[in-house]
Figure 1 (cartoon, protein in one colour):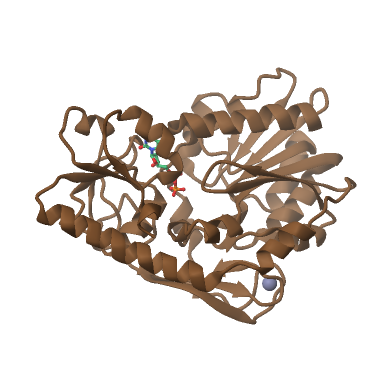
Figure 2 (cartoon, helix red, strand yellow; figure 1 turned 90 degrees about the vertical axis):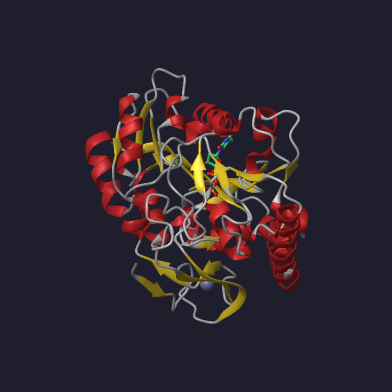
Length: 390
Ligand code: TYD
Ligand code: ZN
């Protein structure tokens, strides 16, 4: 797999980086369809720009390979589906006039757009993953299979006119040419329109030791400081920042052209005070203690499995060196992932039905951001999440 080393910051162009965490060589975290031990590994290193403060990884893999087939369906989590439905309801009622257009960048299987109940609103999805866009189209959501950029914004305007609302959830961090995305948003948005987006918040990642959210598809780990700088270049200002209790600490941001900029100083102060050495030592703590715990369970002849095969599970298992000897298999509700194996560590992925009635001494929840939903599906089981091994 081809990759390039990052030489300048994608927000400010600076080249003065500090190293924050080295995760060694890792396979692409979502490469479930490939032969698990033959997957090439690439360096995975987190660093921070000394100028604008953007936290980013040091190596960018060829994204067409990473995104042309994607296996997570938003609809497979009822909690996330409900979260996006409420975002769409709120944002359409605030920002979309009668007959207005809503464009979702990274529309996945169309779950969020499909949840818009207003009949007068026109909907358009944009997503580069062909197999998943096909699912969206089947349910009647018009979807363009492409990476959103200035050029696609122009094409959308020619076909549909400008958009009153542009939504992008968990997208900005995935895109190398993020500046071109914001330029496209600027073009596509009506003068009074709103750009509503969600990103995992970098301070939460650091505070909660979520190092497993670092993988090759996540190029940038945003704070408000770098976001404001990126938006400003294209005449957009943050007018609202709302913390969300999903994905281990997400922020929902609203950017408009002429809205009052909200007070950013408390956010930026918190970003300046992030404790990186604590983050690195707690990450190493999890690596050591989780591994030890599984070794002890194996020594005692206990049975354990993983729950969820999210990308972050791939990072966790690879970083901690947990192979099939310590964790024999994992279960995941995504049909596209079942029967394949975890990249790099090789665990077979089974349907959750496989553990119905199976005695298990412990379940390690790799999809810890869905822990509540998962625990409710397996009453009476004993659960662990990686973060408790700090
Ligand atoms: P996701 O939260 O998207 O994590 P990442 O961005 O790190 O890939 O993925 C969650 C995974 O967990 C997904 O593969 C589906 C799986 N899952 C279950 O198997 N059962 C469940 O009840 C839920 C909510 C998720
Ligand atoms: Zn920078």
